[in-house]
Structures are given as structure tokens and as C-alpha cells.
Length: 90
Image (cartoon, helix red, strand yellow):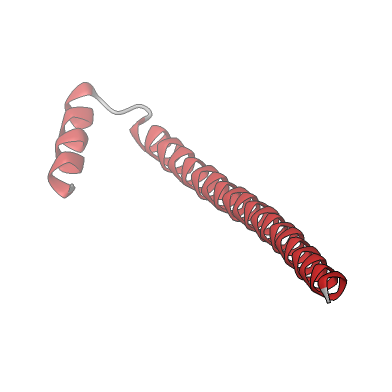
């Protein structure tokens, strides 16, 4: 009977340790998946931000080119009037 009790106790301890090891492996796996997901999401956000900034810069550059062409050959008074009109439009 003593040997049977020892076998049951040892089996229970081994099963408990196995469950702990499997749980730790599962937690580590979930943490790794979360890190990968976060990194992917961060990279996607950075790419979207970069594209948005590139598009804005292109649009701003085009607007500046149009304004430069419009202002070419204008007098300083016409330039001041244009600048004031732009400020009023804001």
C-alpha cells in the first residue's frame, strides 16, 4: 500500500509538472504571437503614415509650383495683395 501511494503521488507530481511546462510553453507562444502582431501593426501604421506624408508633400509641392508660376512677373504690390488674400482665406 505504501508503494501504491508513492506511485500515485509521483504520477500526480509528474502530471502537475507536465501541465506547468505545457502552460509555460503556451504562454511563451502567445507572447511571441502578440509581439509579432504588434510589430506587424506598427510597421503597417508607419508605412501608412509615410505614404500620407509623401502624398501631402507632393500636393504641397504642386501648390507651391502653381503659386510660383502665378506670381512670376508680378509686382511686389501684387504679391502683397495676393499674400493678404491668402491670409484672409485661411
